[in-house]
Length: 120
Length: 108
Image 1 (cartoon, rainbow over the protein chains, first blue to last red):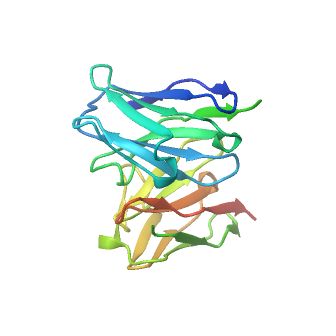
Image 2: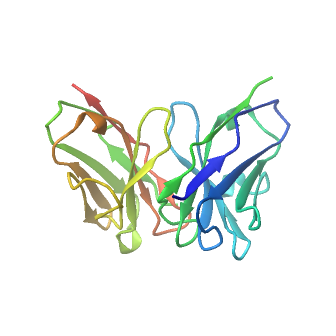
C-alpha cells in the first residue's frame, strides 16, 4: 500500500525558511509526479508547484516563483519543498500529492499534510 | 488561469437526501478535465471523480459527476452520515491547475 509520509509540523519566524519532506513508501516513486498544495486556516486549496522525479522537471505557480524550490531524491523516494522568506500569510497546511501525468493533473494519493506556522 | 466558482457555498441537507453541487469555470475546460475531492475536517482531500465523470477506486456509486465545457456537477444520490464534508472541484485541462473555493455539505 503506497503512502506519502510527510515531515512534522514546523514553527518559523518571518523571513526564515522551511523545508518540508514527503516520502513515498511501499511503491514506485519515479513514475509519478509529486505536487505540493497548501491550505491556509479555514481556506481552500492552492496549487504551489510540483516535480516529476524521473526527469527532475519542476513547475511552480507564478506567485511562488523564486521563493519556493521543489526537489526530489529518488534513492530516498522523497520529495522536498523549501519556502524561503516566510511571511505570516504562508501559515498553512502543506500537502504533497501524487499524480500519474504531470504536476498539473488530478491527485489520487495525498499525504496527511504538514502544518507550517509563521509566527514572531 | 481558469477560475472555478462553486455553488452553493453551503448546502444544508438531511441524511438520505440528494445533493447537487455545481462548479462553473471561467473558460472552457479542455477534454472535461475536472476532478472532485472530498475533505473532512483535519484530513487530506480524497479523490472522488476525475475526467468529469469517472469514479476513483473505491468510491461508492452514490457519487456521480457530470458536465462539460464550463459547467460541471457532482451529485450524491443519497447522503450518508460520512458524506457531510467539504467538496472541491479542480480543473487540470489548463496550466496551472486550479481549485474551486469549496462547497460545504452540512447536516440540516
